[in-house]
Amino acid sequence: MKIMLRKDGAGVLSVYVPKKDLEEPVVSMEKPEMWGGIVTLANGWQLELPPAAEGLEIPCTVEARKLND
Image (cartoon, rainbow, N blue to C red):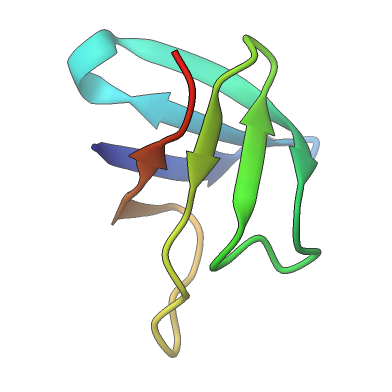
């Protein structure tokens, strides 16, 4: 699924899912750099993010895979 990663003014990383009109903060990351790992959202969703392309900056849109329902 396509998601948008962005940070708010306080630096909190969040994920926006356009098809669900859902925005949730990231509460944990498998890898400190987040790319190529699993992130957990406040609503309990776990998303597997792709490895980062060189020069990728936030905000950005990426293809992620939802791991749980």
